[in-house]
Amino acid sequence: MDNAAYKSLAERLDALPSGFPPTDDGIELDLLARLFTPEEAACASHLRMTPETPAQVAARIGGDAQTVRSLLKSMARKGLIEVHKTEQGVGYALMPFIVGFYEMQLGRLNADLARLTETYFQRAFRSMLTVEPSFHRVLPVDEAIPIDIEVQPFETAAAIIGRAQAWGVVDCICRKQKALVGEACRHPTGYCMIFSSTPGAFDHDPAITAQTREESLDTLRQAAEAGLVHTVGNHQEHGAYICNCCTCSCGVLRGVAELGMANSVARSAFCAQVDDMQCTGCEECLPACQFGALALTGGRMEVDRQRCVGCGLCVLRCVSGALSLARRPEEEIKPIPATMRDWQVDRAAARGRDLAQIE
Image (cartoon, rainbow, N blue to C red; front, side):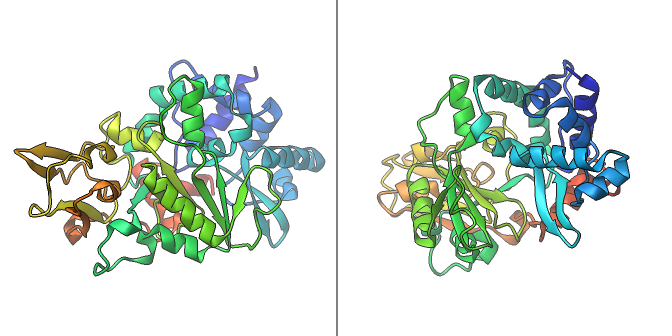
């Protein structure tokens, strides 16, 4: 294996705001070798966050234009790098590991890749979950919010679906990965939702089940009923996907429940509250909370505000109507980066990285 090419790519990926930290035994290089050829890795290690045409990449790195074009197209087909339209033509850009090219590997995921990913998560990548701003933020279940509470457009899943022009659904790679390592959970897999501003964008994609807006809203409701937490990219303009996942499998949510990292996901602006007059102490809500935020004490259900992420799943399970979501006081609500660029700048600063070196 050409470790030099994979090491260069790993270092380049770690320079991104998302990060790709090294391990003592180089498991991250084995992971990259399962996805990139040595030639692809060497080429990708020179890419920037800003899209460039093959001719621009070749001119900058001193490579043969046709060879560079072939490598870039190959990586794009595998979902390993980003593809964008630019004024000069089709441009290619470096994509982070998570959230990024790993999520694009559903078709290539096997037991070997799943084991490598799990090992890498345990040894190194989970350290990235403590960096703020977090990768993801929680969206509340719309039905759990009282109708008289003001909700910002970026705070609701229904608004994200409403803004899109194309809707699709794919299997959850997190739950598929955990199943392949022998740790499958009870939650269904087919609820990861993706969106596009281009009408019909997913109509002919064999890897994506295209949906209508109404079907997408129904998928969202089904995901909540199945006990899955809605999360999205942690900036206000986000509209590319809604991850419906669980603390059993999702790398980000596992950070809270499995590893005790309270800030591994940005909680919503809401928190569960209990109406003592209506609560019967039936405990039907307890299994719905995957974060240990509910406890029955002396016949009274109590909410741990530090543990509650404001997902609202407990509200759906409350048969007496005693639970609801309430907006947190402003001092408890962390600001959400306005744009993806703002998120990148803030996160790069938190990691001591200079974006100018890779943009």
